[in-house]
Image (tube, rainbow, N blue to C red; front, side):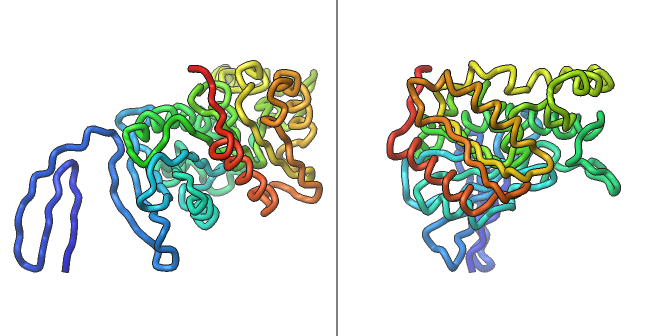
Length: 318
């Protein structure tokens, strides 16, 4: 019987009742592998549990990496879940992405999963409705902190020989898609973005009100800190920083939480900046879908990743 116990940068190898301490040299990269599992039903895809250095050096980011064992220089897809979710979600879909040759990293967003703080999502709180200080603060703080984490995670992944850090995409669902949009505007190393059922105008999203006097009144009723937080992130105010990255958005026309008109307007206003790269901007509307990721959305998003990370990689000047 062979058991490996990892603690810090030292490994203890236990073979039967014979104990021998072996001191291993510390690996210089900030990624720490905690667990590796290869599902018996899919021996080609490995799932590795990671603890990644994030924005706060005292708070590592728990993650799962899915990849084909033995591959090298794989393009990276960093996946972010929605409000109240965790890195464990959509595991089958993420394995499918890994089968196509991507190094897929699913992370716990700030205040979610293993990073959850008791009471944040207390009973009786309708967090997804937003609209008031507390829920907006949790949502937007999660977006802001997680986006900063991703920049540090890209630094960490660059140390791996099986990763090509010059080809990095982000993919997210709902709140995770909103995080993707912040990164689209602020992180130059990300070249491809796939956003499912997320917001692109954060003030429209958190107030559930179109721009105008009614929205202004709701904004003015919020605390100064919350107003500052939303203003610091809103992609609607940073559209010039997006092109020529490859941006794929998919939303349901019957989504009661994300108004499809706000997404249509955003893409329409963004279109002129893509005149030289018209194939790098698209909006997929599912006419009968609500706030859910359909199989068609996922399939088209996967094609987008293959097209712009593998077949014809987007290369941007640094």
